[in-house]
Amino acid sequence: MTGNIFCIFAAMEKGTATVVKHTGSHYLLSCLPAWDPFPAVIRGKLRLAGSKATNPVAVGDRVEFEGETITKILPRKNYLIRRSTNLSRESHIIAANLDRVFLIVTIILPETKLAFVDRFLVTCEAYGLRPVILINKVDLYTEPELQDQLAAFKALYRGAGYEVLEISARKGTGLAAVRALCREGLTLFSGTSGVGKSSLLKALDPTLDPKIGEISLSHLQGKHTTTFYEMHPLTGGGFVIDTPGIRGFGLVDIAPEELSTYFPDMLRVMDHCRFKPCTHTHEPGCAVKAALEAGTLAPERYSSYLGMLEEEKKYR
Ligand code: GDP
Ligand code: ZN
Image 1 (spheres, rainbow, N blue to C red):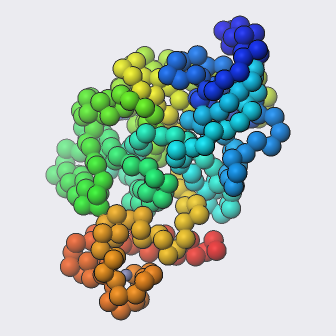
Image 2 (cartoon, protein in one colour; image 1 turned 180 degrees about the vertical axis):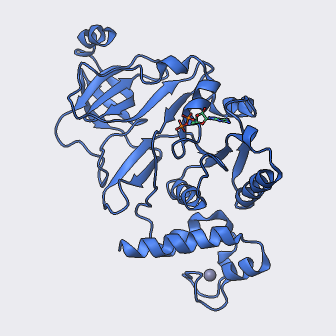
Image 3 (spheres, rainbow, N blue to C red; image 1 turned 90 degrees about the vertical axis):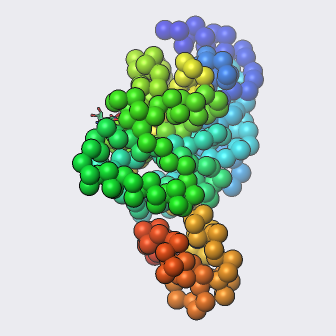
């Protein structure tokens, strides 16, 4: 067990490292860009000031350690957070210090719901992250009807101001562009289950295949540990984080009056609303509603906005 050999040295060491895996109350750290994962734990109540998240430390966090103990969490440049469950007031930090975020979606098998896409995008905007949308499984969209749906989806999100790429993890379509984007820094791969996140990671770097799930904390684990998120180095450079099983995406700490500012397509017109703040629902002289009527704001995006507004009110 290589981990144990390292521990002998780590026990005396002190330094700064990045969290590369989080399993229950245990962590693996690595002194990036070197890939040398070693185990660590947190003792006591170590938290970033003001954080309400259930996990005080997330994958991607830069920390100070002494031996096998994390002693300090360094300030984050950004992070992605979601509500733990739909009815919960608790939130969960998915990852920290990201250079980019990929949202992987599919038109069919499974169909990614626009409500999920929009929630995810709003959270990215609110936390200062630039998402890129990857439409996977384009090899399947051969019927004219599906091609129309693909074109409509692309137009919807390009129109909203997002970068949208078409890919096929299975056929290799579009992967060179994805690989080029990931080459530097830390990239988060997210999307609902079944859209092809693991297939995409394996296609980007075939050496990842056996590595996924390889980093073992078995000598540290109790019976009730759950694996959360995990970072992997790509052979071609860069690091990736896979996020299995994101089903819903609860918004965290977004006030109803600021929600529309996280829709780039609404943000670009709302300056012209007569009332400020404007909820863009019933106010006269609303520029957002005017854009909707003029066809420059997509009705799908506006209805996502209304849905989120309603839901946010429920939690307040
Ligand atoms: P994950 O849950 O997001 O990690 O999805 P997986 O990578 O496990 O893929 C789910 C299913 O979709 C598997 O049966 C894959 O073989 C399939 N799949 C993944 N990518 C593609 C693709 O580009 N085209 C097609 N046709 N199927 C794919
Ligand atoms: Zn308005």
